[in-house]
Length: 160
Image (cartoon, rainbow, N blue to C red; front, side, top):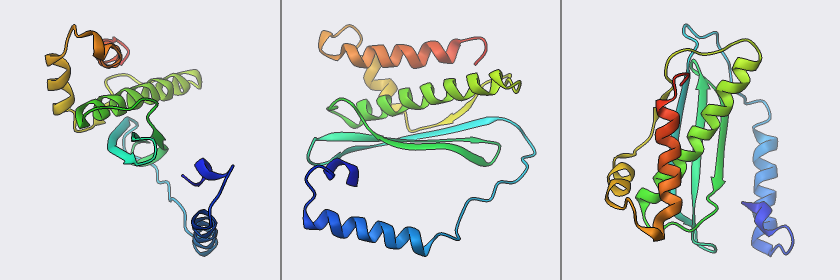
């Protein structure tokens, strides 16, 4: 978030940066503990926040991917478009999560740890599914249809 203001920081941004540096110094002994999992499967979570960025009016997608019980990928990204509903923000986050899971499975396959069976994903997508089923064929939501079709297609893939 602070990186958005690095070209022209205000005093509030300098204070926030000092707070971040103080926090990282105070928590330098804290970390993640990875344990051997009893199962080797990918589990993914996605969740958006709707219009959290008040300047750009964009939502943010959050994704966590774990192998077993160990988180291995996590990110929070500003969505590239302005969405008009929470359902659309959810669909965008689900699409980002699906892409990250696909990439994770590909990397694991490349190093000889190919996965069989489905990937478990968690997201609040009931609104997104209902919304997309109601807007099929409308020109002004073509980008939503593309993301919905991508998630649906990947979900049907035999290797998934």
